[in-house]
Amino acid sequence: MTDLQMLGFCRWSYPAAPGAFQKDAGDTLEEIRAALYAPERLELRLFYLEHVLIPCLLGQTDGDFTLLMLMGEGLPEPYRARLLALIAPVPQIVPRFLPEGLPHQQVCIEQMLAARRQGIAAVGEFRIDDDDAVAVDFIERCRQQFALLRPFFEDEGKLVIDYNRGYLLRTEPGRLDVQPVVARYWNCGMVIFLPADSDQTTLNFHHARMWMRLAMISWPRAAMFVRGVHGQNDSTVAEKKHNAGQGRHDPTEMPDTLRERFGIDLAVLERAWMAGPGGRGKG
Image (cartoon, rainbow, N blue to C red; front, side, top):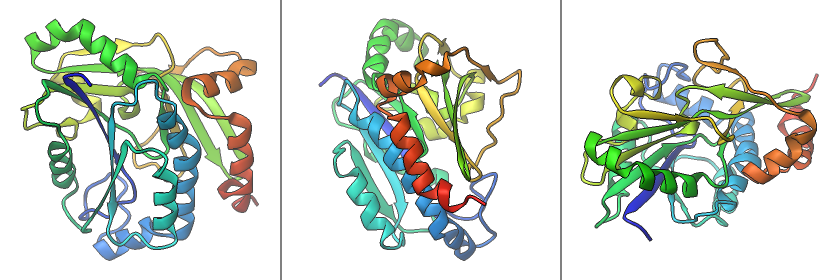
């Protein structure tokens, strides 16, 4: 235990009040619930959760972290039971089933503030979707680099590290592809360090505009994230010259890299995709 708490946030099919996202699922709460709880969508989210997010959390070299997972009270069966079974081996995941239709940002900030430990000096907060992964040494590296940068953090009051090298995991009917990428300001590759007594959280800052307000350090030395890309992404994933570009890689090394850096077995992932959402949607 250290005086730095590592605290993550994952929103998993939470029907917030209308207007929360770029690609809102409807104009009313009923329409949003119907879209988020559609069986084909939940099957895709469970696929990514099981084969992408869970492996990287199980493999963390430093297990001292908490990941809040936000869900709606109305998440239907059998999906609720399946989700709880998937996250059961990861005690660091704390499920939060909340009343639906609450203002998104407000409820997320409240949950993050309530999860902070007593007696800590600082908190390192990160956001991750259920279709993303972080490297198995993510928590350990965050702690190491915070220790090195602590004088800078104390001088600035806040600090962000942008781990900007990773992979895109593209899934579509009948096909799965992994592509290296170097990208700026993506949620899945960022951690923000805040004083423990701050009333702000990572949800108070837009990830693409943090550099305008906060001290930020980029770290491109090793792959630190996998970002899922599919038709249900809320934000547009695009490799634009000003934002992202392809990284160098040897395709023959991809299976070993995904296994060693993220705990992901590429062969198992591909088989599961074709036997599940990817195969059912083919043709």
